[in-house]
Image (cartoon, rainbow, N blue to C red):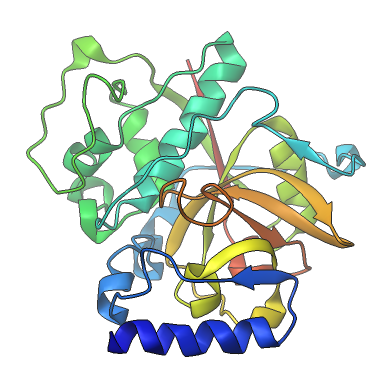
Length: 283
């Protein structure tokens, strides 16, 4: 109850500011700070992964002038999933990108296994299951291992023993790339024009976890220290505020049916969203 009342006061304070975002109670309202942080599995100390992989510089001359675009409308996005009380957000961001890439290559939308990454793409790839990792490191694992379907390797929300079965694998990662220049709205939009894109954000703030609708902007007071991996699937504008449309992994009962609209601002972006986008392709 104490935690609920603390969050209640914070929500009322946020909504009193008449921000472009609306905030309310949800399944996280009674969590302690440490319990909530357990959901945030994309940590800055995992940035060893930034030292490898390719870089892609999308042609900024081809940045779309469309007012809105969504890979959901194109059929490239699976339904919102729920990571539960496991810091495995990095795996959901990774599978979302791979699901989109496979759809764009074949026209077939499949749901890939997060649990395979949790159990198997571990310390050797600088990932630690429910204790965090990087989607880029998951992609690196996928360059040498086939990725199984969700149905064949279902999600359990706990660390388990690797039960990888190569014969059940459907895809491999043919290439993955950091999007450059970093801290550029145009670069992220150009990447998004090509495919759904993994992004990392600072989700450790009241405004993020209590988000219910609208556009989250820097006025909400969140930081930019990256701790949560999600997936950008498009962009749009609401009441004159431009935003990135982002798929989260906290279930469809959070935010706007599992999604959040994050304002488009220069530099690192709101909650650091433009800091380190990454994309991948599949066979």
